[in-house]
Amino acid sequence: MTRSIAFRADGDAGSRNQRLLVQLRWIAIGGQLTAILAVNFGLGITLPLTPMLATLGVLLGLNLFALFRRGRSTTNLQMFGVLLVDVGALTVQLYLSGGATNPFVTLYLLQVVIGAVLLSAWSSWALVAMTSVAFAALAVVHRPLPLPAALASALSPGFMAANWFNFTLTSILLVAFVTRMARNVRDRDAHLAAIRQRAAEEDHIVRMGLLASGAAHELGTPLASLSVALGDWRQEPAIAGSRRLAAEVDEMRDEIARCKKILGGVLFAAGEVTGEAPVRTSLHRFLEGVVEDWRGKGPVPLRFESHLGPDRPIVADRALAQALTNLFDNAAEAGAGSITLAAVMDGPILVLAVRDDGRGFREDMLGTVGQPYRSSKEAGGLGLFLATNVLRTLGGTLEAQNRAGGGAEVVLALPIASLALEETE
Image (cartoon, rainbow, N blue to C red; front, side):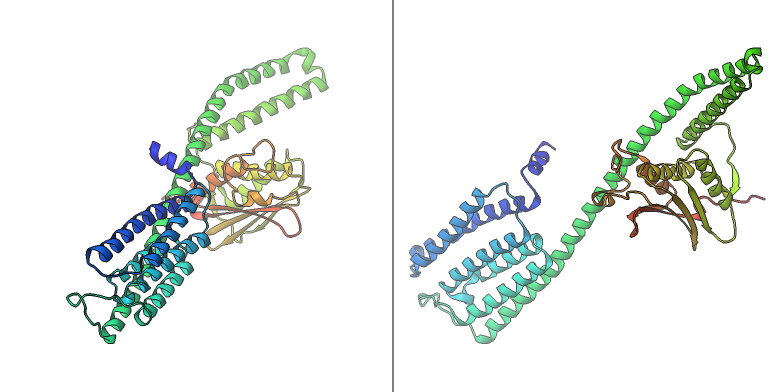
């Protein structure tokens, strides 16, 4: 674990791949130098040592330059350029030592595989084309090796053509399958990252639910005491005989009742039994109730546009009602002068759109809507985060966008089956 953390800290994937290429190039330099010296001095085959060693010097300089840039980000184009230098160096070495008749010509496949793993699709196929052309050219243009009679052999043009075709076909198949497998691995990693992100968000929700339910339990007792005390005050002659004082006490009792209702909703959303049976209602009545509740305390006008068609029975979902209330609150706090809730049925999917004429979302927020502590409000605003997770538990989705005429639109889509009332005989 410690090694992987340190590995990530050194830079991005491009720089790590660059370091792997440097290590592979060191091996290639050492292998080529050993082969050149062994063939020239061990087998007695005269090679053009000066240009071949100069080519190795180019690879050595490329490696030193790569070490100098260590830790910097490497783009696909830069990686492609580096592999082209490697292919060019190998081509020069093969040209000076027999061309396509040299058995080391298959080292082109190593460059093709590396390109298929590290490069984007167009770069990988470009590398296949260049190595195939280089192979064909080396079959025609090269410096013949002055082999001893015991080692000399003649390869027919037909054999060389078949060898080239074999190389090209192998390169195409390698790139086709390796790139597909690499894409599958990337998709899997992205899926695992999304699962980990969702698990982290759900853990965050669980923690908030525990805090909220704990606070709801703690606040229940003092609110009940205040309700009893206000009931006693209401019976006092001094208060009962004063219309103003009696009205103020009644208003306080109403507000305490409202607080208790909110706390009951918090406990219900947290999954705790409150002793209340599920509320049977209809879809239209449920949405109208959410709108009316917010209108009673909301600072801006809220309009309800229903295109639901025939009404249908459902079980009132307090979590969904709270999610809609949070979206109304967010719109009001974003400077909206008016808010609209539009409801429509799209087959089995219930679509709810909350539109406003406020400031809208920042462009950098639109890609992260629904993540915790991502809001246009300074306080962090968990409204969209909570709404996203409510929709997720109901099997739905939430999307947000800015409207062309100004303001924002948040669209909630969920299967109506998640709210449907199951009839029993």
